[in-house]
Amino acid sequence: MRHDLDPLFAPFRCGSLTLANRFVMSPMTRNFSPNGVPVPGVADYYARRAHMGLVITEGVGPDHPAALGDGTTGGPALPVLHGDAALASWRTVVDAVHAAGGKIAPQLWHMGPIRLAGTGPHPDAPSLSPSGLWGPFDRAMVPPDYLAAVMAPGQPMTDDDISAVIAGYARSAANAHALGFDAIALHGGHGYLLDSFLWAETNQRTDQWGGDLLRRTGLAREVVRAIRQVIPAEKPIIYRLSQWKLQDYGAALAQTPEELGLIAGALADAGVDIFDVSTRHFDAPAFAGSDMGLAGWVGKLTGKPVMTVGGIGFDKDLASSFVEPTTTFDNLEEVSRRFAAGEFDLVAIGRAALMDADWIGKARRGEPFNPFDMSAYGRLE
Ligand SMILES: Cc1cc2nc3c(=O)[nH]c(=O)nc-3n(C[C@H](O)[C@H](O)[C@H](O)COP(=O)(O)O)c2cc1C
Image (cartoon, rainbow, N blue to C red; front, side, top):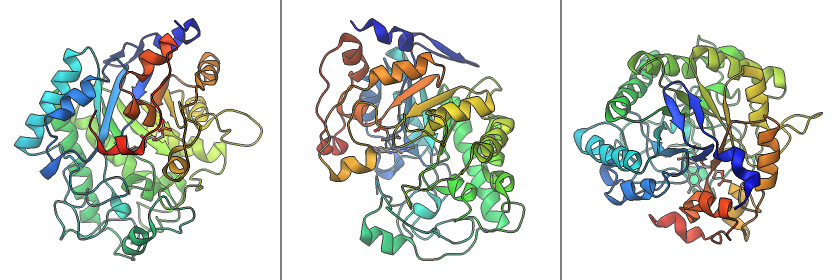
């Protein structure tokens, strides 16, 4: 047994959410939901990981016609959280995770400008973005043919579009609450819809939804507020925030800690309880002059619990692992060191948890991890 990891196996509490340990399964799109309905194997897949403190599901489309379509990680079989068939299937997932002693949150994910027009459950719905822009690209995590097809300029969202999106998030969050999900997670990063409002490159609006940093958080704040109206005050809302974008893996939403504090502080004031801070490398210094990672900064600036993620268990980050040989790598000592220093409260595991359902058990027992295997992305194990 590796007793140096014991502190990471201590419980965590936030509102009505009590977790058995500090590990979280990071949201990962799986494409096993034809017509938006998770296939029966999805319940077992998540239940096998229920010994992690919290499972955050793959991105799930909120109830809005342009939420889903072909994307970089998924196509025709992405799940939704509305309609009898999808809700019945999600109920079996929630029940299976609970029966295994775990906790689960759905990740609501509106693709916004990253959705390929003409695809998804409502191909006629135009893809939505704040200003009809896809943003500049540099080291885009998107294949060239997809890039060429997806970045055509569109129309800026109308006020009606914005109201419909907010209402769709609220309907799906209410459904999730009714099914017994333990928290609601929002995909607010990676260049998708909420992030495209935060990012100046994609949000060039001059109305109430655009302008300075604070105003650009307006849509995310309204979505959080609308969700809070339909779920109990003590059920946590988890918000994924990132500097990086699918359009540009090196992008920076906040250039300084002050800018980061403005964005995260506004979201916290609107009702975000936990920040899921998505980085390429969990231990990369976020700003010059300190070795603290981005999650540590968000926690310090908001006083809210924070989750770190990025590169735990492998020698390569997510994008590099698509194109370079990737091997397992035990960097838990650094995770423990930073956790002990109070840099973050929760530790999310992505690819490692996909390759190896018992990754955290193996970590604790000091056993070797499964090797990296891209074909696992296509299997439900
Ligand atoms: C196959 C795959 C699908 C993913 N899908 C999502 C997703 O739906 N939502 C999301 O926020 N992040 C998604 N991610 C990113 C992961 O949640 C995680 O942030 C990233 O893989 C970095 O963590 P890691 O280095 O531990 O893998 C996905 C990653 C992978 C490998």
